[in-house]
Length: 338
View (cartoon, rainbow, N blue to C red):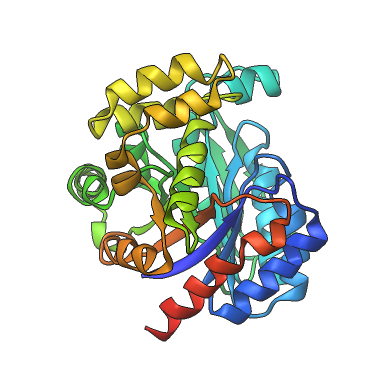
């Protein structure tokens, strides 16, 4: 199993992001991912590509409602060329709030849209000069021929999926599955993967060909209480100011409905301390990785054989953003040695 840092871009400059990317590559990270949340996806990742040579570079994930398949595909082709074939293209449908309130775009026909969107992006990754894409779907249309060759190394397309119906779409059409955070290794192994694998088989695909990524909030500190408090706060912030219905869903599915109900009341009311206090130890033990370096290394091993790559989202805060990543980078170095 590979490890890779994941960055949201909030509270950090692009220059600082590049500095951390170089440190991650030096520490042995297999990949480096940037979300499209507080920053755009491709711009900071291009800055990282200019400063690194080895790591895979991924968008985790681009919002499909903000870009046509053509614009996403052309951007991916350009970036893949510039980075030397290192792109991992993660895309997702976002949610109703992001699409309708932030972008003013109707959040409609998500399953059909993402099926066609991924299909088109895969076609664009593999097309050759002189060929043409002619596609008339229910949501998307494309009649296009490339003016530049996309190159010999096609980028893989990962589909963000948490809800069962989207996981089935991923199994049918995507190269890889981009799972979110707060997913325990047993839940991924026993619930998420069998459902997706079954969809792949029904589509005539080999489930073993699917690649699997998942995200883990991680807080590494010599003081385990500091680490576990940081992890609890990270979970709380999934409920406000921007609610994420998929995390609510997966926490309920994994047996934490009472915690969800409490967070849905406390976080919109700006009661962070009270919200932190309602999160039981079992949630921290199962859904995030938090504690001393030794404890975190032990938790990482639970995901081996379940996912191909685990994306680590630093939950440890502090006034010095760069310094807060030092324990995570040390963990990466130790994982590579092991």
